[in-house]
Length: 292
Image 1 (cartoon, rainbow, N blue to C red):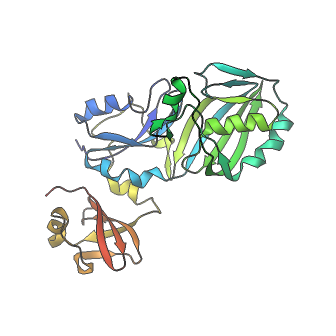
Image 2 (image 1 turned 45 degrees about the horizontal axis):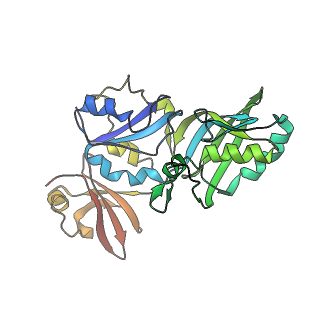
Image 3 (image 1 turned 90 degrees about the vertical axis):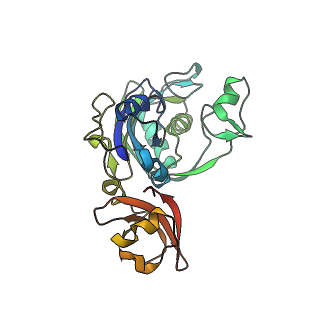
């Protein structure tokens, strides 16, 4: 059983991203399990789960674009902007043409104010903590990029929308703003994340299906699909140099591509050993996964 690797997990509704890992930890018999990118409790879909030493490479997956299918209910706004919140506003349900005219405003680089019930830090506290204490958090606008919005259906006041967006995009904020732009109000009634970067929920397993023997993938399978990092293969007689954190030199590599930036260092068997940064002709460690 491999404990150091990456899992594509299909999170069910009704459980937090943190709590869904409990079963994975139990099956793997390790507490070193984390995820890259949270999903709200009511949402379903893809979580990238990292286990063992691979938890050290979580940052590689945090900046990837996301893709969702969102059900947006018009005419009702809740305080959490999702189906679990209290109703705070009711408006008429707009006709589809009003929504259709508003959609283009939210494609491209847009400014969003995060939901009050979010994990954004405000003066050292989470925004949702401030809200639960009865205060209103002062949240600033954030620039995000929405690459595309495709209408899948509209029926009885519910819009089903495919959303392709950058990291940091709040679909709940998009629903709120789209509702207001259409002369109404809205909240997210359902949400499923179907992709993170090149990784698809179609290839994910549910917590119940998860098999610790076959469903923990080697890092190479995932890193080779990322454009944010390059690859290098270290010579066999220099693996100990990586293990012991020695200064790395160009001649240590069996193969390495050109250019500055982050590199994933593998051995000949494609086992991930380290993440390093190449800058101004020198190499610096960012994470070491192989133990000395």
